[in-house]
Image 1 (cartoon, rainbow, N blue to C red):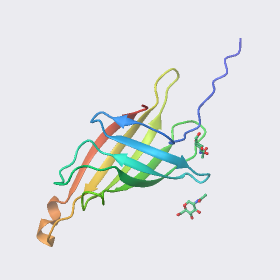
Image 2 (image 1 turned 60 degrees about the vertical axis):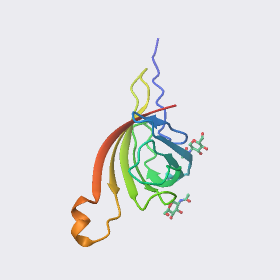
Image 3 (image 1 turned 120 degrees about the vertical axis):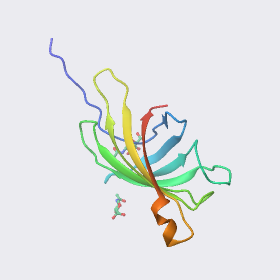
Image 4 (image 1 turned 45 degrees about the vertical axis):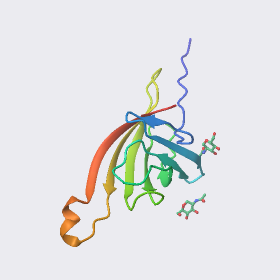
Length: 129
Ligand SMILES: *[C@@H]1O[C@H](CO)[C@@H](O)[C@H](O)[C@H]1NC(C)=O
Ligand SMILES: *[C@@H]1O[C@H](CO)[C@@H](O)[C@H](O)[C@H]1NC(C)=O
């Protein structure tokens, strides 16, 4: 028989958590790929207690389920920092969908001589929850 491979179009609505226990929730993706939602980090160097923080982003609307995307998180509820994420969705046949992401985190420093230490980078893998 003919095997018809049905590829799931990429749509970041919903989403899940990463290996650190942080969670991203995308409320909805519009017809141009704009999206917004909430990021609940499990890790923070801020002194105040962690709170879910707004995220806003944009994704490609590819038919093959392997879209790239980016979003910004403003941690204004408990910190002066801002983070940006970029990533790509991957889903093989019979495999769970994952998001491979990289991020840059900008912390606020009190003076220009401290600028050198203000940016951190890292990578996270998200799985559906
Ligand atoms: C993505 O999926 C959500 C929920 O199923 C839906 O409301 C939204 O319209 C979809 N967005 C696109 C661009 O297909
Ligand atoms: C997506 O975002 C862009 C930039 O803010 C905006 O111009 C556009 O109207 C948005 N698309 C929709 C469908 O709202």
